[in-house]
Image (cartoon, rainbow, N blue to C red; front, side):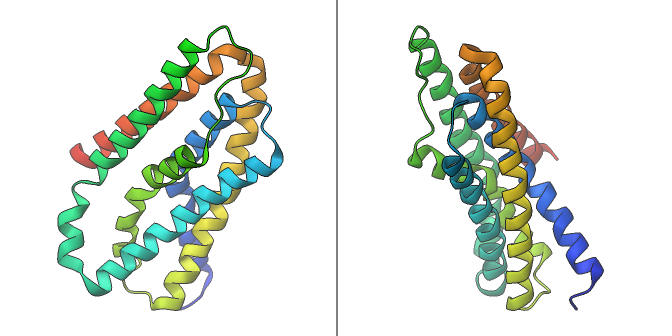
Length: 194
């Protein structure tokens, strides 16, 4: 493998594909917190970028060390993502209904953000198989490209969600929770049935 146009192009496309779930969750986070500060927006995008880069590297490492054990774990990925995203989505909807009359909506905390980062990127572990032919530096470069693409896409998602969150007001948290539940179901259905 060499660092040529196709290497960068393929990894950018891989980054776009992997970032779609993270984009949707970023959008939901923006909907949930329309007055979010830029610093938090960047923290959300950075968290997703980190996990989207780390998971393929972990997958690559597994391919080069414990392939058989990873293969056995791979079938559980859709179930883990479903449980994590259902939990967060349902919690958001319940909190929105409980706090219906309150002006201030619950904000995305650090723990919830870490769970979202893991849940949306856990399927990227299998990308380690895709990049298995790369040496470590190429795998690292691939992960950094994926991280950059994810960061840009997620920053856009939070920004768009913030704009619409202001317009949707009280319904934004319920919509954000519903989006997370939908993403969890989509990851599960795609992972188990296709």
